Amino acid sequence: MRHLLSAGDLSLAEATSILDVAEEMHTIQSRQIKKLPTLRGRTVINMFFEDSTRTRTSFEMAGKWMSADTINISTKGSSTSKGESLRDTMLTLDAMGTDCFVIRHGSSGAVAQAASWVRAHVVNAGDGTHEHPTQALLDAFAMRRHFGTVDESGTGGDEVFAGKRIAIVGDLLHSRVVRSNVLLQRTLGSSVTLVAPPTLLPTGVEQWGVGVTSDLDEVIEGADVVMMLRVQRERMHGGFFPTEREYTELYGLPPQRLARLKPGAAICHPGPMNRGLEISSEAADAANSLILEQVTAGVSVRMSVLYHLLGGSPE
Ligand code: NCD
Image 1: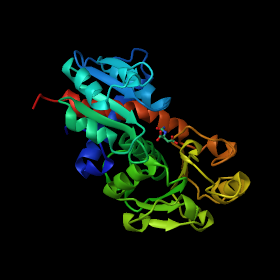
Image 2 (image 1 turned 90 degrees about the vertical axis):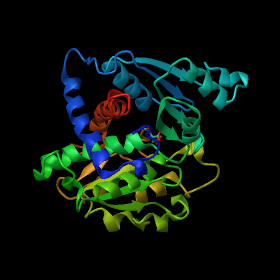
Image 3 (image 1 turned 30 degrees about the vertical axis):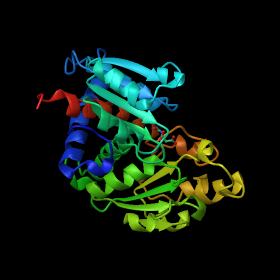
Image 4 (image 1 turned 135 degrees about the horizontal axis):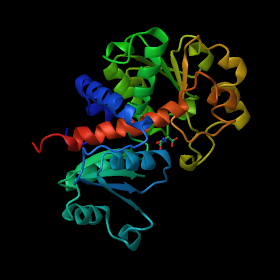
């Protein structure tokens, strides 16, 4: 694997290998001394041209826990704010001997473009409304562990996803998380249904090969996982739904809807959450909420991704 740009680039074997190695990395998190020598002498630059709390921090932790030298760059502190092009910035940092770039950028396609210019490995940490492959991997990791505990199917192997029903709910139009999840979950073998008001469904969604509905109540009882997505106000220019109250009623998880989930069904949210809008506090803090497990999984999965890109032999 040279780059990780899209969840759709991963074969079942590659995705499973990332999840399996992440399982080993997971044990590090509970140790007092969190350090492996794996990436000693390798340099990872985190370039975040868009805001981030968990993705940036977990990539930095992942690199540090594996002894890589990690450097953080954001738009404000870099020469892109002096007018330097992304290409020149990338070529400059690549020329210094960087081994891997982790890039988040506001424009869809910018990370793949950056990857075409450099010698180093590139990980897409979110490009516009396009993709966020490590988020889909960490979601799958948290789900796989959860399925392992509820139906004793174990945490190993790919068969745990077969027949599982995943509902992804909310602002799908602006979400890179949904695109990466659809691609990865298709590879893993689960069945995905997208739920959103018609105004927040991406164009061409009928061709994605997944179920699509605007009625959350239709799918709530059959779902093994409900993944709630953030209403991305910063990407909305105009009204996409009449009122927040109506959105919460139709597409949120108030207690009465929460009660209709089947036993053992899990609640996910990639964060950051708008509590009271797309997710109620009752759902976010419920016993079957995987939200903090997803955050924990973020470090393990990103360690595994860096290991897969950088840890092997030079060939
Ligand atoms: C997501 C993102 O940035 O795409 N968050 C994340 O990485 N945890 C989702 C979002 O911003 O709503």
